[in-house]
Image (cartoon, rainbow, N blue to C red; front, side, top):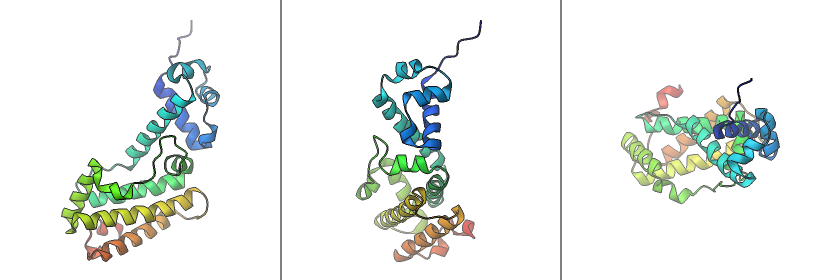
Length: 201
């Protein structure tokens, strides 16, 4: 007798994420997920009851997936911030459906950026404090730098993900780095003295 395969919750979410990245959010439903896994719809319904439950779980799962790809555990928080920006651009280039889902309003728990509340997030507070130490800026200046760089990066990534603008990852990062240099110069710091500057050359 063939061994019965147990369809886990994570297997279902992995299949849903795969469909989302490949085909877009509109293609994600109970039938397409079951087909992707190669099972009946019963396990999907059993784990999530309905599409609302699945959508909620997928949104959280996709967010965690993106966050892991954007995380760099480095003492150099300027480098970590730049790595996060690079991951953001890579997603827009290589996984545009995921970018649109997470950042352009397709996700059911998607939220607009709270640019005024950047410093309130616990992880951001640590990053802002460390960047201030490493650059000589005060925290208010760092918040402005982070906010301005995020707005610029989001604009480029959005144009890339939606097909409005074509370019390579190298070109996108060069544009973002140039903008970041201008933002940091505006705060009175020479961009050439930034902790990650040597790695860009």
